[in-house]
Image 1: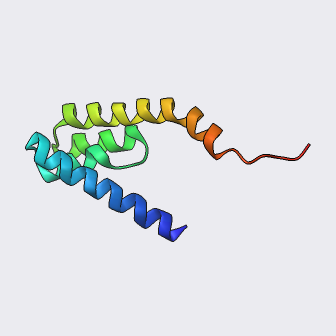
Image 2 (image 1 turned 135 degrees about the vertical axis):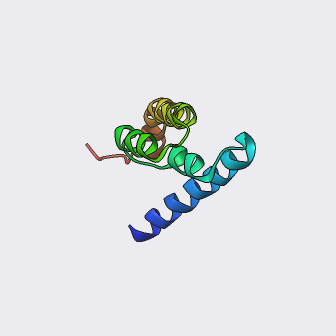
Length: 84
């Protein structure tokens, strides 16, 4: 479990750095845009900290849509066959 958390954190950090370079935004906005977790809590933190809400909302919404589209495929691929 701890390994999975570390891998997820590393992936989010890499995506944040890529976003930082690609959009030429501030580090806090890039971090909040790629942070996993609830969108409402991320948006509240972005609003209170003065981060660019447009970028944060766009990336978080894209993350949610990709997750919703990829979940059924991942379920089929990772499905464990249960003997009948």
